Length: 189
Image (cartoon, rainbow, N blue to C red; front, side, top):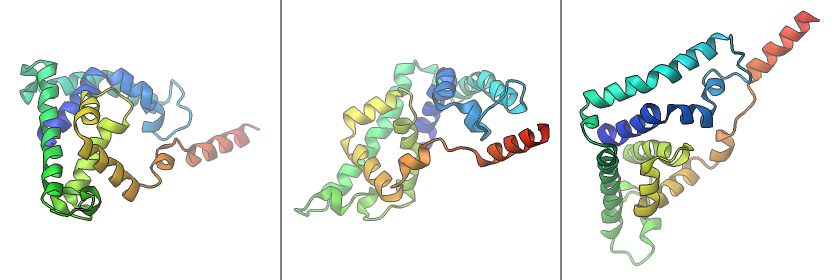
């Protein structure tokens, strides 16, 4: 998961689709927790440098790891094999229960556990990036089409541990910025 899937996700996001990532997530504004980023502000310069330099850095890391010796379709396949292995582990864990009740409810997490473990948290953290960042990751399509147990796992984990997910993900006004703007307006008056 860490070597293939995460690195391949970074390659897709930062190496190949950085402009789309920046635009869809409004990184310049969110990165520095400001509501308005004037073009001459240092945070705008830093964000612009990150946007322009990171793709080459990520593509180089992918090359050094040996992944870019393969074409993109092979790279996506490597990542999908990791996802399929996770799907199979969930199937095996739940199918070994021998209960007639719904296996998903009895053992919703890895290793047949009824509560989340470190592995569950790590898997959720990695797969969240594919499923909930608004980019068309190849892994997102694979998860939706081929991994029903993982999709149920993700929904269950999210609703159990992040019931306020939508609220937490909404852009909130930055109180520091508001206060600073009010102070600047008062000084100018």
